[in-house]
Image 1 (tube, rainbow, N blue to C red):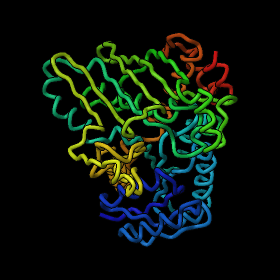
Image 2 (cartoon, helix red, strand yellow):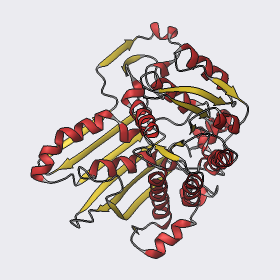
Image 3 (cartoon, rainbow, N blue to C red):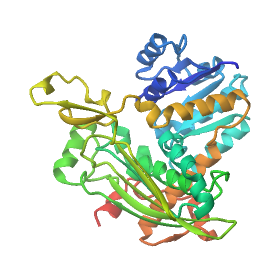
Image 4 (tube, rainbow, N blue to C red):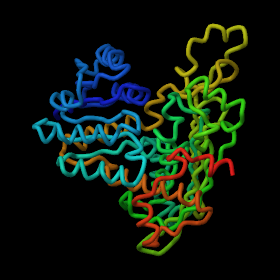
Length: 414
C-alpha cells in the first residue's frame, strides 16, 4: 500500500495530539506544515519520531503542492478562509486528493455548508475529525452488545458528557471567534456520540432522523466576578460584556425511519469541571442490557505527596486538562489512542488511499453543526424545537446564536 503524505495547516494543541497518534498509524507521514506558531517545534517532533522529513512551508498553497491530503487544525474563525485557499490551490493545479477538518466544520450552518460546497467544487475526498466516534471503548462495547440487541431491540437512551476546567487558548473563550461556548466546543462531540450509540447495527451514521431538540445554556462559574477577572488577566476576554456558556445540557430525540421508534440522546458539557482533568462519560440503556465508559477510570494510577509535588514539571503529561499535580491521579498510558485519535487518523489514511471519503465526511460534519445550532436556538427560544418543521429548518440555515454574536449577556445574565 502507498504512503499518504499529509500536510498540517495548524500546529497548536490538537495538531500536536494528532502527531502523537500518527506514531501508531500505518501508511502515512507528516510531509508538510503551514508556518504558524509552533510549526518548527512540531516539525522537529515529527522528524525525531520517524513521522517523515517534515518541511515547514510559508503558504497553504505550498503545503497543498507537496502533499496528498491536508488537515485543517487552525482556529474555528479561520477554517472557511483556509478551505477557500485549499480550493484555490487545487484550481491552480495542486495535486492533493483529500482534505480533513477537525471539529467543528463550521461555526454556523452557512459556514459548514460552504465548507462542503468548496470541497465538492475542488473534487476532494473529505474526512470530518470527530474522535469520540472512533473510541475503541465505545465501539468494542457496541460490538459486544450486538447479539443482545438482535434479541431484545436497540438502545433507547444514550447519554454523553465531556467536561474539563476550560480551554487552553484565548480565542476558545471568545464566542465571536469560537462560535459560542462549551456547546459549540464540546456539545458537537456529545450530540454525535449519542446518535452513534443509538444507531442500529449496519445502518449509516445519518440513519436516525433528528426530530426534536431541548437545550439549556448557562454561565455558572466563569460569570462570577472573581473568575471573570481570571479570564481577563489570562486571556484578555471580558465575560462581563461578551460571555459564553460554561455549562450546557439538552436532549435530542431521533426517529428510526423504518420502525417509527423514538430514541433519546442526552448531552451535558461544561468548562467548570474542577476534578482530575478531562472527563468523558458515556452510557446507554437498552432493554435488558447497558454500557458505560468513564475516561477517569484508568488501569494506571499514581500518587504524589505534597513534598514530592514540587518536582512535577507538567501535570498534563499524565492526563489532558489535568488540574492537579498531587494526590491520587489517573494516568492514561496511551491517551491519543484512548480518545480515538489514532483510529480516526487510520480511517482517514485508509479511506483516502483507496479513493473513498472517511467514515465521517464533510456532509456529516455539516449535519453535526446543524444540530449544535438547533441546540442554541432551542435554548434561546426556551422551547422544544421541532426539527421536522420546515420553518425551523429554513431559520437554521441563516441562524447565528446571540452568544456567538457577542450578545451572550442578553441570554446568560437574564
